Length: 499
Image (tube, rainbow, N blue to C red; front, top):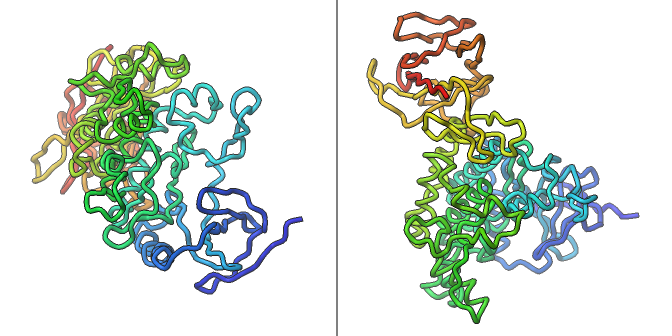
């Protein structure tokens, strides 16, 4: 029978843990509290003064700066953030919340749970590689492409918040991110190694596959060499771009067929991930394409970049992938910010269309601006009348400019406040009122309708007809609809695609 140990944290809280290790990593041993609502993680080795000072800042000032601001509650689900430090029998430990239940596998792996993953944490690696997804993960855990976009959006938001607070994660990878694609959730873990540029240096250089090229190519230099590049905000941005690429395309953006050193495997790895890193989908240099002919059957069709190119991610994400893996690959200052990714992901979600093939694994795809939309994943063409709402916003009363933002319509699609007014952003600061749906779309008797639930100013501009709350408006090609008056109020122009 395991005994329960009670002790006091440095800030005077009484806590308890069950003396039975539930997990052990390279740096810490982890124990449950008696009610399993939190864990206690003890470091395996003594931490020096600077490490302890950093931990004190993480559970104190940095924690407060994120969780005690407007919208602070939002981050409770996105970070597994330590809340206190304790010492017990000469060992230093941290208190942190237990991961939410949906971050543990509900179903075992294929073939009678041959990998014994049932009940284990949903490390991101299981969902980011086609081979692992297809060979081992129960289809009920995989989610669909819309949920993968949601996972990416939450990650971008979490990294944006860290960077706003002047922090860098330093080891962003699928090992330090838990994801639940079946519901579209993500959580950043292991934040006790946060980097504060100029104050607290990184403990680690990162996890292979996610280490930025400049860190890899200077890793042979001593730590105090001014030319040695260490993890910081810009290296987080490389790791974030890699994670987003992998969660949407299930392959690595730099691991192609190119060999740089046939005699030395380590040297080859260092060159291909460092100094000579090259995007597998580089438009003018195809030397590092993934060799689809040699790919395992479980890596296809994702290993075939001709069949499923990164451009299927649409007009907002594609330029950011080019920026991250071409322009900014060896020029860290050129990398897209977390905010850039967040904005592009929000707009991409609005461009999604449900696939009309009920057997399609991904179920959703990005509308490609064509008159013949077709699901890139299963090849099923769209059939029917497809309304697209082009969003315009007012800078001056009565003057509207295009926002480079469109909303695809499908039955049950919702209209929200952030579609109606540019001054409302879909982020952690949304009030409960602004989270509410304001209207929705239905297809009835071969006509598309917008049902008004909460918009007092809804107006069919063409006929100058006001649509009261509770009323509905038929969508027609070329129609102009005013969603809201005043600053930031939006006008939509309807475009009909018939296929």
